Image 1 (spheres, rainbow, N blue to C red):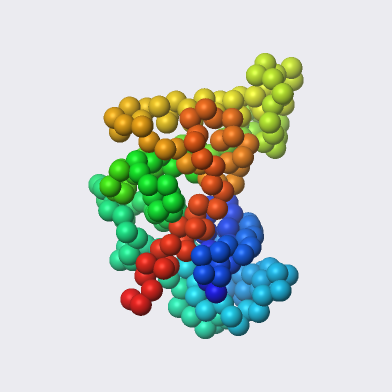
Image 2: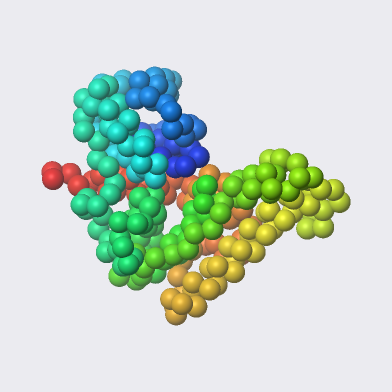
Length: 256
């Protein structure tokens, strides 16, 4: 079995695969101070809750955008799973050409998403990922990673509003009932959700214009259902795109 770990700035998304099938998945907070032993305890409990024997997990792949956590997860993999994890980064086989000015700058999650989306849907593509940052990635018809755009994520924007506007409260993201809010909280909900929806549609239109061809738009990420489901530009919602990309990359690097 394969354990796939996607380490984001806010959350770790972990999936357990048997062959091509995603058996189960979990989400835990990203904690920079968590030790390899603590990661083991958390992951082991999730595995056991799903009636899976830890011993049958023989491979691990990790995409991480928090560099200090890479050695910690490597140590956990070696100490408790007796395997060297595959870390998504320079030198591994992805199957796509990266046309960034400096390919090493591209976040591992963005490459993984592009690999999965192209494998599943073909190109050209625009992938929108709703994470700590909202990212847009463009993939050509030939499967080339062309680049994209990065925007502050929804939760990050709400936190910035709370921390920098003295009279505005901290609020949880929620679907607004109306565009015209009748209270401060309703107004924040409206501005956040409808503002992001408009931003998504506007950015997709701009990228489509630069591509000079119609591209399929695939959305993923933690709050994909709330925002992407209302964006007119989104064609497909794929909440497990990153985990699927990790599985595909792992398969492409077998035997190396």
